[in-house]
Length: 603
Image (tube, rainbow, N blue to C red; front, top):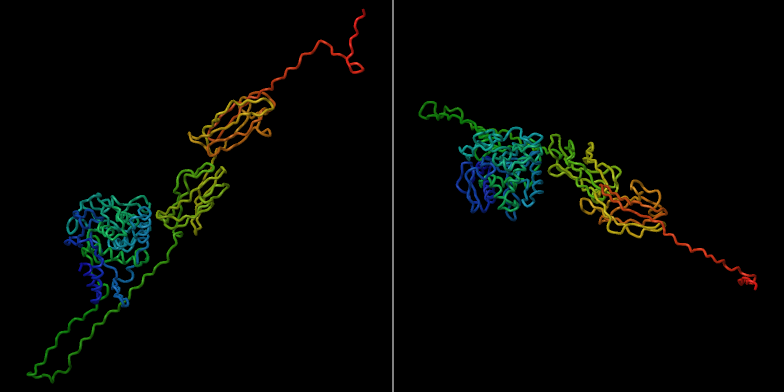
């Protein structure tokens, strides 16, 4: 029977059934592939996996194999088939299922964060709770400030080789205050060398603090998931726990709390968690001796009464002189036992109530060209009064102003829930055909807080070059129509530019202003705005030559600097030559209609 179970049964077990059930539960939780080597000096049985070699004391474990709390949760006897369930007495009281609010939030946030980045690990927050219980009694019963930092540092004993591993200083005393040897630090009891590798800034306060429960829980989760472990597999789960402290007794103790918390737990106010007592080294925090305190008051036993002299029947004053029989000793009076009070579970505070402010996360301007998607989206972080992020807050984003820009799906509003880092990003924005500025507002659903606003701008699509595609010079006579077609290609940085608005103007010969006469489009129009197709092309309509011959310019421009000019030539029509006049007079018709003959000269 292991040492911590022996202490537990000596303190609280009251029957043989309790002992048998506890031994059975402990035996059932042993890892099948682990073999217990000789007992080490840290108070636990050193354990290694099959085919593995145990490194020197303190190497390869998060805590340097520091001491830990060995108390077990309440046990229930296994039910035999056909028999009603039998419940053992609760030794440690119902408050053992309570986890301080900030500590519980840190475990659950770490699980959510790691499941999003390493889903194959299958990290359950109850495993972090089991380790946190064994390492520090849930941060000394949740004695943390509003930011999750312990009210005073939690330090393990000096790892100087006297009863523990021998680990020389690795942090210059920065975390543990010891410049000679290392000590395990914080609610998850990381030694400084391990924290240097795995430390996290989970509460976004700009520092990695092993005494902060959010930072420590996130680091512990990542450490347990190392080496591509899948904690849904028993072998990987055992290896992960043993990487924290290489002792089969430690493995069994953590597993007992892990399974206990999986059956149900509840939140208690910070600072009111139940503090464990028994430790693997039989000493308290910072290697101080712990007082022995039974869980229930022991009955007081009266001092023994002095024995009365027996009368001698041979002497005067024998039996006849005995006046009173000896009195029966009174039973000791048991002190009244006050039943443990059930902790009051505070009502769950909605996440929105905790929000003190929304902070802008996305940086840079929100801009897009007409008909295209914005490269950035409005993003905010929900923070409490201490600046810690809040998970599960509903943020409503709303597009306001004169614009046809929409969120994906065509909506003008969208509601997003903050993730583990307290961040919510709006859905993708897509610009319409209207240019100009508009506003996106972010508000906390259920809170009357001022909105956080973002200004967005839509500009026209651009092209930095325009060029005519082939074709002959444009020439026509007055009154005719130019027979040649005009097609222009728009590009931006060498790529085709679809959807660009191109302005076409028929200008005077200098190309400086719209022409007052000469060529025109239909109905005398001399300025048109056309949009390039998906291939970046536009085809101009027919151009009428007009009635005035001369030289003109077709000028095309686009946003972004693209431009080109095409010459228009209008010529006058060629004149038809008239016939030359005759010198012989035409004959004059007679009265009869036939030409009269000229009189001949007389003879």
